[in-house]
Image (cartoon, rainbow, N blue to C red; front, side, top):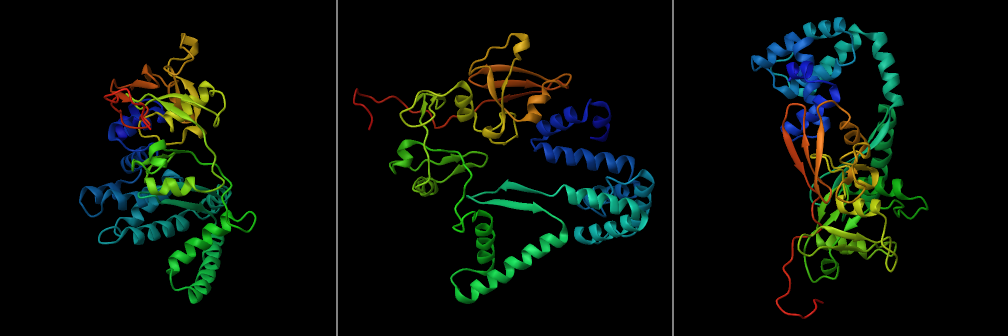
Length: 358
């Protein structure tokens, strides 16, 4: 991987090709490349421990991650310091030792990087399985610790009054209520997109619905969401034979939506393989660029996040439309990958008689 990173083109191009080849996310591919290059070029003792079986790649990553922003000289000092401190130690212990070594050998640089990191504080969302997700904040340690301590105090007080929920459940509920309570009622204000079959919504079917950016959610959950008085609705008309979208309306009894609305409703997320950024936060892009006479229609336009929209500008990357937002991607090494928007439902056979379905 280190050799490929050196010869494969720009970092963006190399990262995207590794992601496609190993069927991992862009972030995972970037991390794999970063670890590989660091071990080969800057951390010979850590690489030797990996090759000898004293540590695995995960433990080796603790050394590479904490030395990624230091100079080659400091990295060499840390690598030498850790040479006899890797075997028979867990990843957490290795990370603490590396962190201490970096502070020891690069005091001024450590302080400068800490200040920059504190300025990059942010909140992120990661979807999990079975209707759950992880919302996390990247915060200064003393702020995060204070927040957790405050939630824990409130949770313990609630637990003393209400034993029906565990302490963790109370803490999670306090967390959600404090973030959502713009008016003290804990009601969410953001808009989310849920795609559900009318028959499932009515309870006649138990097909899963789709939560944009997350994936399938069970029929019972979507009916709970639908029962909220604040829910709003848009009409989507699909082709029964394919499940693909034909029309997207702005709302009940309104005129058909624009091409952009149809594409966002059809694609639901970035169409690049392995990318799951919701379409409402992505761009509407031409598969064949307009500069090369690409048509502006639902066959040649698709939803793409900014990163994958820019990827087509990298040397060696091409894409060809296959219809209805689908495309075939060719990478600089000549490998091809196919992407097609998922249908909103499974194909349905036509009724055997002329009786309209109800």
